[in-house]
Picture (tube, chains in turn green, cyan):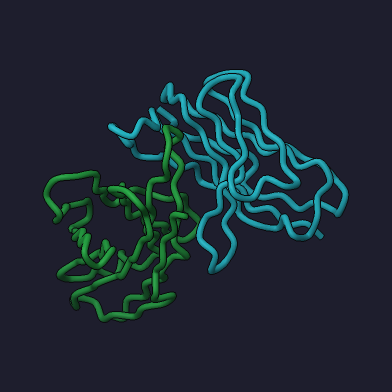
Amino acid sequence: AQSVTQPDIHITVSEGASLELRCNYSYGATPYLFWYVQSPGQGLQLLLKYFSGDTLVQGIKGFEAEFKRSQSSFNLRKPSVHWSDAAEYFCAVGGSGNTGKLIFGQGTTLQVKP
Amino acid sequence: NAGVTQTPKFRILKIGQSMTLQCAQDMNHNYMYWYRQDPGMGLKLIYYSVGAGITDKGEVPNGYNVSRSTTEDFPLRLELAAPSQTSVYFCASSYSGRILSYNEQFFGPGTRLTVL
């Protein structure tokens, strides 16, 4: 069965520091991978997605993610964090079949220190 | 374009009451989804629909019902509310679920439901 694991429930970084959020997935075929961000009291917004091709994908707000098939990982990175990046981040994998269903990880809460 | 809208934003129910959470999208998306979000649990799929008149169960459908009479609307019904249904509910839509064009899901702002 497909699954997504985000090992870090809560991460705190200083403003201006680099960030890496981890995501590991379990999926039998080529995965379709997504990162979403949820600001407090808001819905989810897509940061970036990977379907195929270049394993380093660029997203909005200066985020990028790298797909590593050998490690079953799709980690999210940002070189310099801004206070406005404080939010909850979700990794998701596309399910099988033509339904568009997504399976979400548990989420990682990012706190940014001034 | 309003995107995906949800009403109400907040609601408190008593045990055993029923209610309908409304969801509408104006993007002509054929795929729609209902999720619930509980702290530390991520999002769990309740029901989804691949087009008007077609719905199917997700991961956690018990206690809920849906209908899809139009492309735009996808209401979620709670018949006998229970404390375990206290959660934040998100509706989402996407243009297509086809494997070759796995499209982004657009999310509504959510409904925060408390059952006491």
